[in-house]
Length: 300
Image 1 (cartoon, one colour):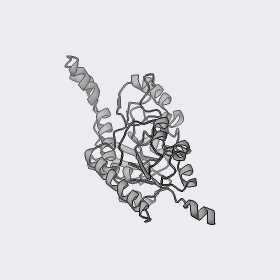
Image 2 (tube, helix red, strand yellow):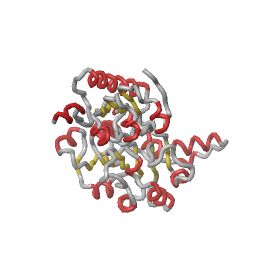
Image 3 (tube, helix red, strand yellow):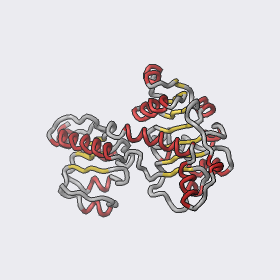
Image 4 (cartoon, helix red, strand yellow):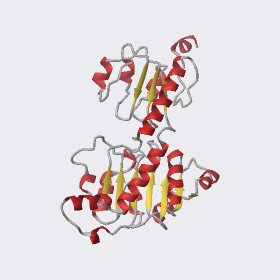
């Protein structure tokens, strides 16, 4: 076993000639070129949920399984979404910076409670469900939009399913929990943000490309939104000239929603167990694709 981090494509290509399995997180790009450099590769394990950094069709075409670990960091991600909402609503970061600068101006940082507010969940899958359960403890009303959810599953999470427009119009906190697809890319853009209350905030712990950052920064600067808590960005690390760096009432974290000791242990165990299963010819619990072995393709 070899462990390295922070490898770009050229460095990765040089090291994969004798590799049977590859484990990556969100920053490592597994491209067709990377796959071509690994003739022995049987399985790619994503230590986390999203696989948009992996060329899944290319892996499938080469007979390489892709597995992920969708359960291991659910609690961590849900807790972080609530943390961002609280930090923005209570102006925690601004207050911290103020006191470190030698100030003591309590009146500048009068925030808002979560109790009695409406949480709008854009996506109520595993993470969204856990966010809903935690929000209910704070006394929030919960609405959700998810084309794949049922009334029964939403109700079990304590949420009411609504159309996206209604969610945007009524929610005080809009928390995004969707995968990155062509339909969700830019979903929270200028048109969607314009439908929200001026007092509302946006929280994104899913995928950076779902939120249009220039549109969000413009809405915040113009007072058309109250704040935002962001853990993910279209380009990571976040560029120095990103418009959200200077946006008011924002809390930014470097893609750490799933980064707890417990979550990292969980996803590591889940991925390694599946890799061992694939190498032993057994089915994986969370296979993202279903490649046919090259021998089968040749014989078919």
